[in-house]
Length: 148
Length: 72
Image (cartoon, rainbow over all chains, first blue to last red; front, side, top):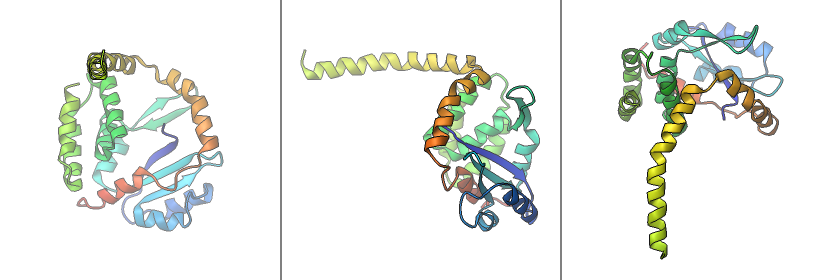
């Protein structure tokens, strides 16, 4: 069961420091030297006072800009709207990770949204990611999901 | 019935059940109400928070390492 909050904050390259400092002044780090870790690995690991882990990806690539730009508000209740990534981008991210649980999650997203998915967008975004990872089987998994 | 036959029947039963279970899962996923599911899982989520501290890393760290290899 997911119990962390995963966020993308689009900072661009070389603009991360003020965001890292501001976030570290509001939330404790999950590890020692969380700021230095974030500068090196572009991921800031925090936790809420209630103990929920927060991972903030410091976005800079056009793919990440697209993910942020396509995000829409989802209402979890009155006064509680949270921007979540599109179904297409969630499929891209899940298949890029491609652990068995991620693939299962991607299947669930496809089952929920399959009539409305922009498959061309998914393929365009995923292909270079699969290539850089050296895992062409990711595209095979995508083809299987299209047949669900 | 010998053990071999028992196992064969067990395998056959699961072969038949597999697609049917997938159909049920597919229908349940399509019909699930997000807010109801979140409410149903609230207790399990709070239990996990109480008993398991946040992990020291995240899948996002690995993702960023791969993204760093992409052309800017």
